[in-house]
Image (cartoon, rainbow, N blue to C red):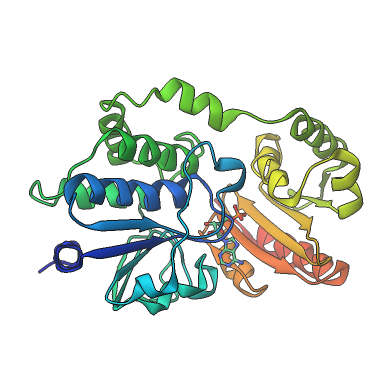
Length: 316
Ligand code: AMP
């Protein structure tokens, strides 16, 4: 049996299925989690399917989570989507189930599942879920609710079909989801929406962004700035892709100070591979989009220096 066939066999063997995803969810985390949950509800109406984890925050308009009793995990199958390593799984109860499946598109550094279906070349975990459904011999079926969030997941993780992970197959998957009357125009408008405060933060970014001789751009958004601009660390995420629009920027990093004064670090790149660097700073992610942590200004300086070395060594 192929791994997707084994996954479907497991799904069919369990009455209760609980689906987790990563902390700080983005549209692909929610799309793959809730898309799979909706597919399973639609395909197996007699099973009980839960989607759990932290609140979906400013993506609550896309989908919500359910709260469940830890006792629910007894004899349940747990599936985790879009989450590279166990510490990033949202919901510490994830390992209370009878079996654990990982479905993901990040490099498989931590194969925490009993079954692991990990395809780092896929644009998104939503695309992987779509393929599992399409290769299920009709046992799994999409509906409108599933298609809507799966489409959003693909749009989110491909930067609206802009990143190099976007393949002809990715486009075919998105096109298939569009046949389910998902109002893709409204969905795209909503995903593109920013608050006035976030727009002012964009202004701050263009004003304060530093670009060095190695074509590395960097910005620190400290707590005082967040307070002055009335944005929280999660909302700052909306500017992470923006420096890439600037001519002459090859790779960039944004440091967002957290409530405990440490920094979340967002790396992006147009060429140099940055996920190994992210791993040295308690992080990881994709070759061209990674996250990490910095304890203080000294670690910020080290990260900028290391990124500059990477950029200087890069040849196309
Ligand atoms: P972000 O900059 O938060 O949008 O994250 C970019 C990519 O890196 C996403 O695929 C994340 O899942 C991954 N990522 C972010 N932070 C971490 C971390 N601390 N450890 C491992 N992967 C991370």
